[in-house]
Image 1 (cartoon, rainbow, N blue to C red):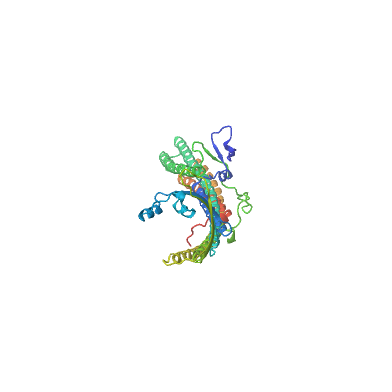
Image 2 (image 1 turned 90 degrees about the vertical axis):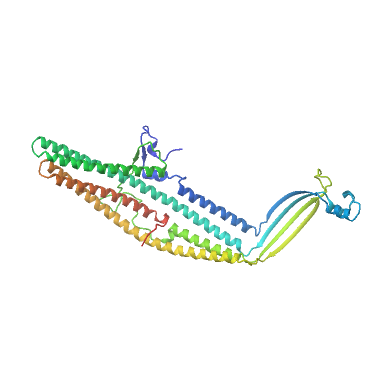
Amino acid sequence: MASPLRGQATAAADSLSLTLADALARVSQQEPRLATARALREVARAARGEALSEQRNRFLPVVSASFGTQRLVQNQFVEIARRAGLPPTPVDQLDPFSRVFAAPNTRTAAITAGVRPYDGGVASARVAAAQAGAQASAYAESQVRTALEADVITRYADVQLSRRLREVADSALALAERTLAVTRQAVAQGRTAEYEIWRVDADVQAVRPAQLDADRQLQVAELALRQLLALPAHLPLRLDSPAEPWSADRDAVTTDPTSPTSVPGASSARLALREFDAREQQAAAQHRAAWRALLPTLDVTLSHQRLAYPLRNSEWGGPFYQNTVLGVSFTLPLDLTGGSVARIEAAAANHRLAQAQRRDAERVHALEQTELQAQLAASRVAWQAAVAGSVSAEKALRVAQLRHEVGRASLLELQDARVAWQRAMATRAQAARDRTVIEARVARLDRLPLAPIQP
């Protein structure tokens, strides 16, 4: 079976190549959240099958077969004769009717069939509740799967961000060390005072913690991605998807064809709202089933038996006698203890709760939709501004570095330019990560679970 990682099956298997599409394809089916949602869906499907079986009993009988044997240990007729002073009569000398009651052994084979033509509508209500529950579970599983995709994209973008921040930190340290080397050369040539070396060296030491912190953040981000995708820990990870798949010059025409242009507006397409609809329908059907349980039921049973009464325990043959019984029963439940009324009240309360949750879900969806629309526009503007700022900061750093090397700029000016460049590059990397995550959520909004939003 071919691996979804295209770069994994290379001649030099010393690293693990991973695109974003590969990462999405590697979401484990055994991931706890997805496995839990799948198990809940299977439970709901089993409950639906059980409810359908109960409904079919209106037309299809429930059939059971049984076989039994009895051994008479103490005969009451012998005891009655003894007390009356009468001599006991052997069983084989009794008349056929008395022999049945005095038989020491009884063999019974029976088959019973029963239907319930009318149950007050309880079975139909339970089927409706089970079907709604199964549909809601299917919606929930799809949302969990989409949420995992969003998590994969977020963690993939986090690794890209952490790597970019480490590159910026490495570059900043290299610039500081280069400045130290230039300063030492200037001191050796007598163009600057010796104490400038101490100032530049202190600046170099001040940059090192940022590099260590960037390394730590990268390790944490890569570990989170490896855990989510069940990737081997011993192979270096290479991310092949670009961190900025957009055109900075023509942002309206993005290089990513899946990039959304707006937030979906129809709430009817949101799986989370469909799930709440199904939960409300399930609660309503359970309420109907609860009060319909107070209605009378009609049962029809047919039982056919074959009985034999051998004299000896070792005999298993006949003769067998047939006994067929047809029964019809009409049952009217009397709720003398109040249990049925309590179940009806509980079901009604659950129905009202489901209705309130559905209304609240609609409100949360509207808030999330509005917020994502604003975040989508803001992320694109922020990324464009960050790109422009990083380009300007890089130019300013080059000028400041050149001016410092020829002695026209102070160390403070160079430090300010480098800090501004670091901040601009970090801002650009963060803006690219934020835009990637938000666009992923917008593109999958119809299949994502509702996000907890505080208005």
